[in-house]
Amino acid sequence: MQRLVAAVRRPRFDQILVPVFLAAFALARAGRFEERDPYWQARAGMENLAGWPLARPDTWSWSGVEGLWYQNSPLWNSLLGLAYTGGGFWGFFAFTSLVLIGYFAMAYLLALRLGARSLPALAGILAAVSPALAMLSPRGTLVVEIVMLASVLVVVEWSRRDTSSGPIWLMSTLLALTAGALSSLGNWLHLSFLLLGPAMAGVWAVVWLLTDLPWSRRIAYSLAGALGWVGGVLVSPYGLWLGLERSRVVQEVCAGLILEWTTPFSTEISKAFWLMVLAATLAAVVVTGWLVHQWRSRQWGSAETGLLATALIGVPSAFAGWFAIRFLGIALLILAPAVAVVVTGGLDGLRRRWRGRPVSRWREYSSGAFWRVVTAITLVVLSPGLAYLVAQHSVPAEAGLLSKLPTNCRLFSTGAIGGASVLVRPDVLVWMDGRADFYGRAHILDAYAYFWQTAPSLVPPGATCVVLDSSAEDSRAISASIDASPQWRLVATDGSFRLWLPAN
Image (cartoon, rainbow, N blue to C red; front, side, top):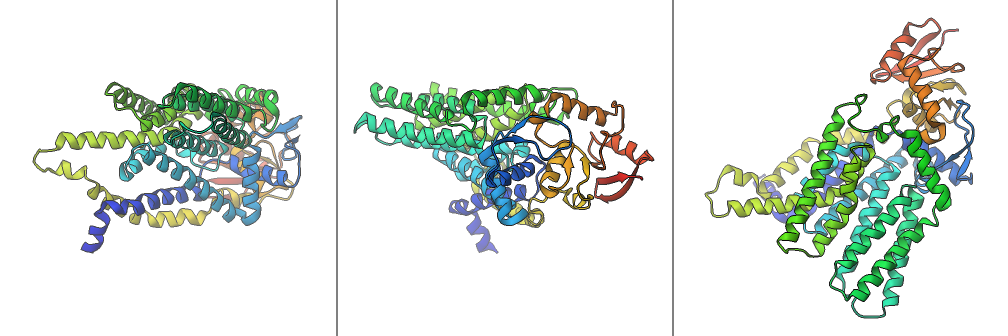
């Protein structure tokens, strides 16, 4: 046992411990997550793979909403559909695990390349992402984060190479092609890249302008990168103008109604989101403060330029999160590598302050040897929980009850449960799922009226089955009313989920 502890305490053990810990975290999140959009996105992806047009009439709902439905993340939907087609929920889980591991790997690698050490990097990354756990699911926005972090890593590593010789046109062409490929990929993964692409053009320009290259090359490389990033927008799924119109529609429909498009200071949502605001704002302030300190102390190099690149996206997102919750998650996931670097620098400063002082317990608590043992023990203690979550393999908690729905019934439920039903029970039509931009603001308000019990009827006329989570805050009152109604009978339960069918 002493040999094992001694081996764990060695610095080189970080090369095993940190990647294993992050991979375990990813597997746990892949096993069970709260987000339900990935399920209907997988259904959409399977239809894409079958040759259906990207913009198509709705075939999933009995809501009566007309018009074409436009996918906001067609490539991502297709990848989810391919994973589900290949292996059911186990295939879905495997793909989700790879994506989450990909995010952690990219954040960790970028942190190391920007000056963080392994164990402080683990602490910084976990501190940043933990308040944004809801974002750690197979969402198109998560893979966009991966593309953005990869883009920062690419330009920072490229700027570190000697590019002062050779034809400027050749290097500029390579930069434009690389930026164009990343921009095109991002736009097909999620329409938000219509705005993020030009933003990344600015980030790349800043990186090149802060190098020691001759100004002619700095300007040429900046313009080449900008050309590629902006050019990639032109090959987005629906083209530039329709894509921008779809982005406008999403914001117009969702603002103030859908949680992630609501201000965290709204009186109608949990105060727990204030902690997320605090975390994102603190991360933004700390990273900004670190950059200012490095600039004033004239300790600026390519690592600081890389931190600035992440801050140019992450810091504005943190403050945008004061008005829409979704940006808080984006900020925290983007700033995670930068927070890791700041944690490393802060720990180094603490050790310098303690240098020469008598050895104390607090000094031991700041040592890597101590925290390696703590981290390893934590991993072992939590391993049964990890095994349990892996066994869930991304199956939605309500799947068992959805399997008991009558064939071809017309389901009334929350949009989240409807999103899972679209994949689990394709024969069942839903009244609503997660496609808020398709259903429109009026339909969402109608849905709220039923859950607030201000609608003329208990449920939408025409519903022939109801599934609700009776423990959810928005469903408790209506669940109690349906239980008390002579028109409905409870036929099955699964945990807090309840299934009602017409009494007659």
